[in-house]
Image (cartoon, rainbow, N blue to C red; front, side, top):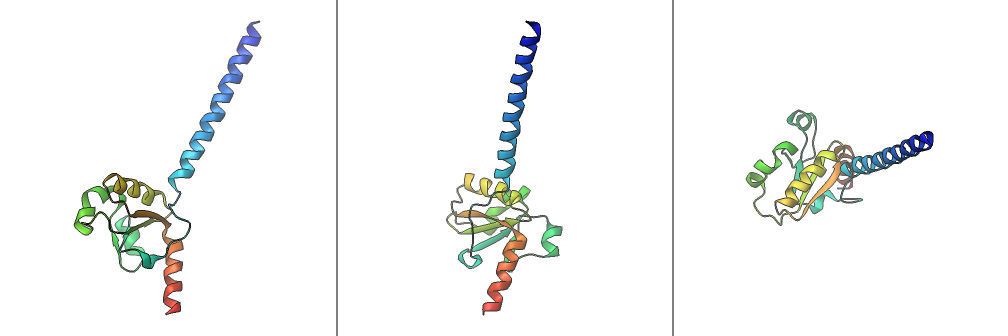
Length: 132
């Protein structure tokens, strides 16, 4: 009887751990998820690189301004006054731009999007230049 009770508790804990791992996995997946499947850089009024200054200085999109995601709430109004402005956000992987996007949406910037990874957008930008 004691062994059955112990076995039942152990199996219950095992199931709880499985659910915990599933939830954590979904949360991690959502953090790096972009808002769109494909973006055209030309469709946005403001392009914001939310990486660190060092990352930005090492390379960034043309016309992009640098506002690190940790400072986006304090600095956005210096660069974008109109909350309806179409804003494209990017970082290295999409995680930080996702965080910045949530902050901006909470502040009322309804047309901000998380465009994801810099390298993908850079390739698109180079492709646009070649077509000219």
